Length: 234
Image 1 (cartoon, rainbow, N blue to C red):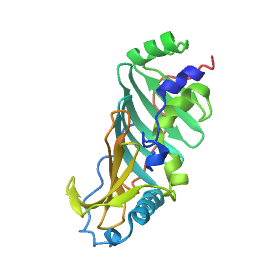
Image 2: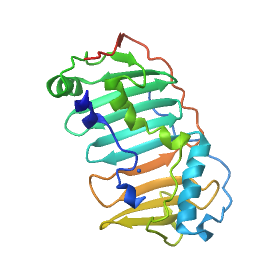
Image 3: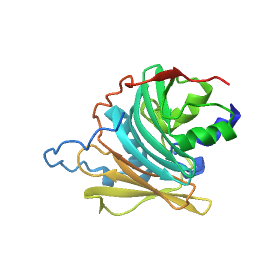
Image 4: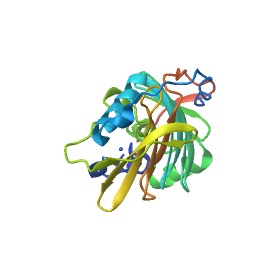
């Protein structure tokens, strides 16, 4: 199943040297958050604190965009619900609940899989398997649940600096600039309320732009309704 690697996604779409059903609606309005003072910390401390805050939330919505495709997923350590559009190949929906995974490919992606991977997939039908299934594992990689169970931390040689507090998408944030090999990734960390990482911008097309929201909201993964088939193994 080596060919399925082209359906997978990296967490950050960035070189490690640089630092990696339908999703729920936006979280309900809450009282104005108080300043958290995170901007007073060093760049590496902010990096670690933001990563830890996202993990401690237990769940969040991740919208990602890179050269290979776009994902819109609500996830936790054991659940994932959402959809992914693969550039020039088609799209799929995915649901994970504990040790069960279901995926539904559209006609374009099912055709691509048949031609490039050699698997016959019924388009529009839910496939069922486990997180270790060779084919479903590639699709499930878009869910990035590892960042909740084992959040990343800044390495000793991380080239990071911080900018001035600014506003991104209506939220007060402090930017962290991570540079290396001529590329730059900017992480934006909330300076009010919990110090969540709320956005990542990268300079290269093959690196990932990500936005995070709906922290702590239930994922609500459930077994899909409709026809379900066991995923093929080869």
